[in-house]
Length: 241
Image 1 (cartoon, one colour):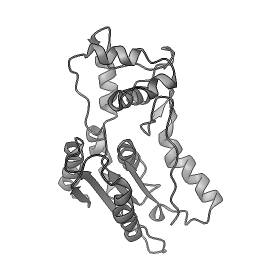
Image 2 (tube, rainbow, N blue to C red; image 1 turned 120 degrees about the vertical axis):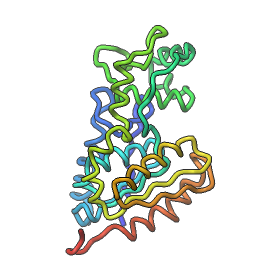
Image 3 (cartoon, rainbow, N blue to C red; image 1 turned 60 degrees about the vertical axis):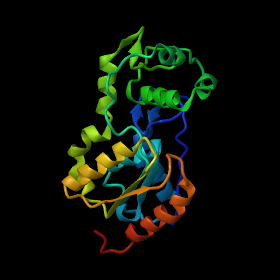
Image 4 (tube, rainbow, N blue to C red; image 1 turned 180 degrees about the vertical axis):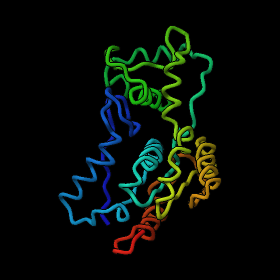
């Protein structure tokens, strides 16, 4: 097996594996550029049934998004503790949150933010870019104490639970789909809903809720669950379907 771990860290703390004028076209970078480079430089079996896609947290979101849209590139899919699956709802504006995000002017500033605000900044850069709004070139969900409904709508359009129904035919092409999440993980609800939608459509998948939080034993799960999953589901022969 060749394991490829592309660096998707950005000045906004993450790419969300999406296509954005502000952060770059990370969706195509993963689905096309990285795949093409690896096939050109290593001894690969250059076909979808021999490639798998996996990610954790923001990477789990990326595996969901890219997996749904690019089943012509990958043949097996493992989604670990995925974030950001459900559409964001417009809610009360937290002045302190808005103030903290608007105070960010440099990558060093963004790196000092707590995890939740870093995720908001990455989401805004990916899903509501604004080339005319320096220095970060993005629009936030609120401005001057008011919810920006157009921004909320853009974020909702990038929620996998909102668009999964459009890609059921693609998802049926996978030899294997696995989803896992910790029983104490706040993201369990979204992961469960994704599993239930796949079951509703009869799309084969496994769903594992394990004892732990969002970051419990990620390396152990990768070694003991992710790698065996791909060992079982990737296919190298001429009769792969």
